[in-house]
Image (tube, rainbow, N blue to C red):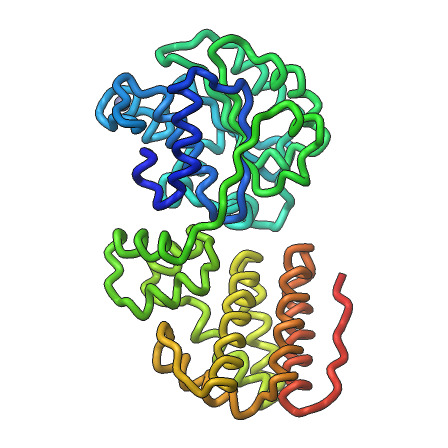
Length: 376
Ligand SMILES: [Zn+2]
């Protein structure tokens, strides 16, 4: 991919190009940024730029043999590593899955990758064996490129295995570059961080997201605005919502809140059972959408003005709920959603989690005292 395929991030792109143009390429570069930001896409574009036989104006040419290979993630001098579930899985074997996922959406996030690769909710990790393979691959002769690149996506899953890589990161072989692309610098061992030059990547702006969705052929301005607002800078989510042509959570949210309001026990239980089968990432995004939804209810309640970016059904739900909920109820509900996002991230049982949350929401609707359950 080229730098120009990524919206915005002009300062960060300039910094990367300057490393090469000023001949001060670090041996290890740690690119870090929030979920759904441009960090992996920039690392891929930087790899293409480094390998390109004819780079022009700070861009890979997109036409040479090296570009054709780097764009397809098949260049023999770039070695990709990423977290997997279970000890026996190897990146070499899972490369077709990772390549497919990244080429489909280069803003891939850890939770979504986990949904693709670890269906039984097993935790991700990068094993000690894989670290030894990295060391070996970086000692290989350069086949056709100018550099040998080791790209480790989500090194936070290395844990203490990262110690195996310390020497390699400190003194890689000549003409080598180690790119570490992380969502969580705090989760990396300090001895790795201190050996790398770092580059921080900010969240995408709503404008960046709108530009990308328009390029994808989305024409409905209301929908684009709604998606950009819900995605909160997460381009992965924005593209996913854009390709569904709708906010996938709106219908589900309105139905669920309606069931909580009416306290239809049997229907609520079966809703929770069905929804529990969706992945963790969907659960989290659903509640994040819920926070945005609550925010709009609050705004409407306070100002009485309609805000663009919602479809007619969403507006009906927002107006209806604004008469049922007091400002304090909305605050409490937002707090519950935020708490439950944390429970999801800590792997709480989804059936119990949504059942408990449904009961709490019903308590709020019926003006009862809310007894929140401790789920973790
Ligand atoms: Zn090229």
